[in-house]
Image (cartoon, rainbow over all chains, first blue to last red):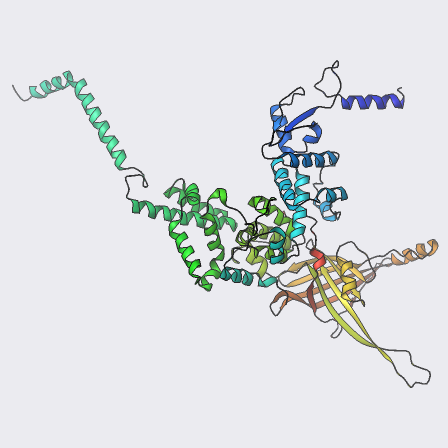
Length: 190
Length: 413
């Protein structure tokens, strides 16, 4: 009968031990290297990187070798954005997968969590680049939270306010604009 | 030499020279065959004339555009028919529609808009097509959903591809069906107009409202038209009616004054897109009550919650009174009270009729039926009581509440 402390130690050891290692090698977390557009290399835990379905699929298809010195090139993501994405993934690495049940989704009334709200206090440009990166790397949680933020910036605003918020040029001709306004009359309140 | 031998001679001659002749024949046949193939070359090759070329190309483009419109409105089988016809005429029409300059129609459109005399009637039906053809005339790589007004150094929203913009719009609309925000978005610029008129989003909205009853959009002419024209309840606000009655006040000692109070109270009916409904009767003003109705799960006195069903312009609902926890009652009394509460179960049945108010569609609800059935748990007896009377149930008028749609929770997928 093992003592509780001994079983605990054993459990910790077995989870830290990557399966591909032989016992005589040093025990460490498997890492993966990601290379940004400018060539900067970031080394992160494979488990954190696997939140990106793109990277996860690539690892499964190509097979990961822990001693691999070759970084994975991400030519669509610059270093600043990649750093932020990695920070988000690191914070959210223990998140449970989102519930599949529709019932649960409807009941959920929690908004963006406070850490994410702080994380997203960035200028619009960074926000759009995060959306593009989350889309490219296929990280659903990050994509959802960034799109939700942009959506909340759009909701409740008049067309002119939207133009001002996002710096958008009005390229309608006067006739077209009138026509669009007529088409939208059904939801006007007098 | 007799004739009979001639053939044999000839045949022997032929046989003797047969190889050479055969080869000659073969080569002449081959060259004939190749010429025939060349002359039967597919249209659009240098063989055909230029004018034939253009005409066919134009036809194919028209068919292709028609196909893409049908696809957008969800009529996929018909769309495939048009695509087939277009590709039969010109096999790589898909790429040619994007890249070749639509000189004919583009110049026409440009000259129309430059003169500024585009017929408004024409625009009415064809604004979508007009804008789509303008968009298609641009190069695929430089096609953007919007353009910045002023130069800016930070990344502009136009970097987002249409698919991501579509996903963001689904968050904007959300399961609360905030179509007003979507329509505002469509007035911003041309590219956003096309994004907001994406039939996919409107189709999802229709399915959210009508569920299995959605049917086809053909008779309405598109999913957006169905959403606008087909009667449905409005979810981004509350239907409110105001009532007042006169109550005599306390008489003063000498019967000189006979004061009376005018009591005003409101009835609020709030519908949620997922089928839930809340009815609340309260003397408080709308500004203080409406925030309480924002979420489904708030409990307050005077509230009935339940589910509703809508068929055509009739709405039927079944509701029960909300149980609020009363914390001031000490334990033993609470126990008794709970027992009392379990004695009867009251179920409210409501039937309403949906109609328009002036230009505002679906903004009025009339009471058709309102009854309460009380079931006594001890005896199993049921009593139904009709609550509707002539005076106490004026029409409910819809009023939008901004805070209900101020932030989105769940995207409309």
